[in-house]
Length: 88
Image (cartoon, rainbow, N blue to C red; front, side, top):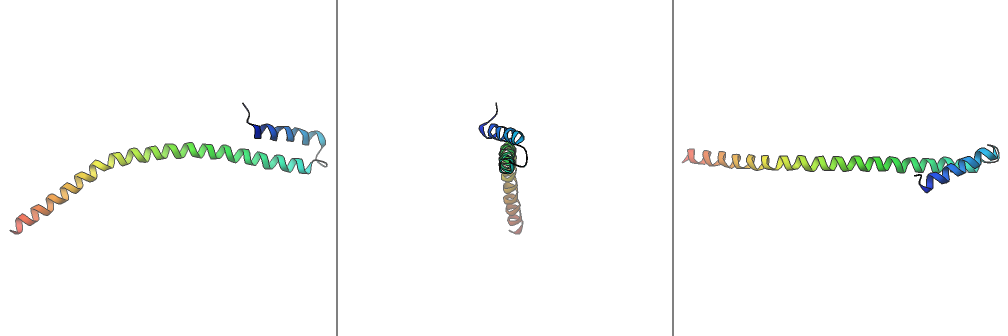
């Protein structure tokens, strides 16, 4: 199903073709501008989907890293304890 903006673009473009290029400079410019807006909105939707996927992947990677960070912290504490016990 076509959205309103694209239908408007299509109708104006069709009108511009019927009127001829000389008398439809404004109509053609508006059509180009509306098509550009339509294309940018479509691209924005694609980028939003891509962002969603990447945000999800980041969240999953952070979940994997968290336990490792805890293990590293514990090992560092053990190292400090061992160094202290050897000094005594």
